[in-house]
Image (cartoon, rainbow, N blue to C red; front, side):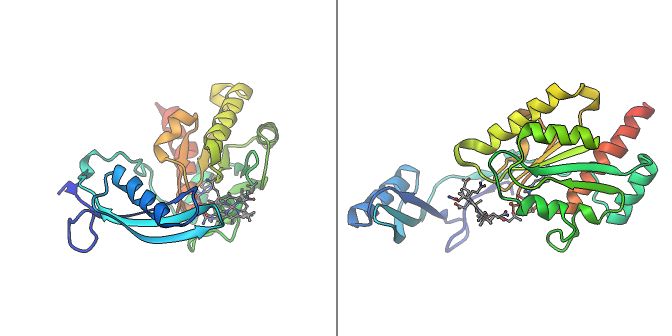
Length: 249
Ligand code: B12
């Protein structure tokens, strides 16, 4: 069945929970304002179930209520994985046979972003979710530039290392910093390289929409929960398998 409604107390009752902050001190009026907002967003009835002062001038709310909207799962657009998931052994073997040299990856957090935990989860040997990071792969050379790398620094290092792929993390999303940062980065790589020689551009972070690769000018977007194995498999698919297919045709 492709049409579904939210489930709260009983199947299909349409109940949802919403949290937000209003820039007003906690009071009965503030709670009324929260209920009014939820009502305008389509929740009816809208019940304020939690209100907590956040300092003297702000209040955090949780509102529980019913919405009448239906969701059609057949109209949902997502990026499905379109490459096979490989084990580290298979990744190493493919690179060795297909490239006949190590695959070089340069990565980091660009702009002001200092949230390195995500890129480290993908690159560092300790990895993520029980999987080892790309440093563990014998046939992958990892250059992790860490936090707050400027775009010119990233381009220069990618050139110096003859990077096959550039992996960029953006976690801060205030004022769409992640979107602006990635667009600046992809434009800089397009300017610095002839199209055929440009490294594969891969970005990731918890608030990216995976369908945005084209708009951002990158080859792939990875969102929250990404594992190193998925990234390694994607790199092999793009830089070894598909390249060999193109060369053969
Ligand atoms: C830890 C943390 C910090 C640490 C960072 C330490 C470090 N070395 O990374 C410190 C204390 C330094 C910090 C500072 C700040 N932080 Co902070 N921080 C967090 C926190 C709690 C966790 C982030 C994290 O480590 N997640 C774990 C990793 C594993 O998850 P991930 O990043 O999503 O990565 C996964 C995927 O997204 C993906 N991925 C990520 N990157 C990449 C890249 C590639 C190429 C690929 C393939 C995949 C990929 O793979 C990873 C594994 O699955 C978040 C809140 C939260 N719970 O998420 C806030 C948060 C990100 N921080 C926030 C803020 C505001 C800040 C500060 C501005 C606070 C301040 N006023 O000073 C500063 C900014 C510093 C800066 N210049 O960037 C906000 C951002 C809000 C926004 N809309 O932008 C958040 C959301 C907290 C909040 N709710 O307000 N922070």
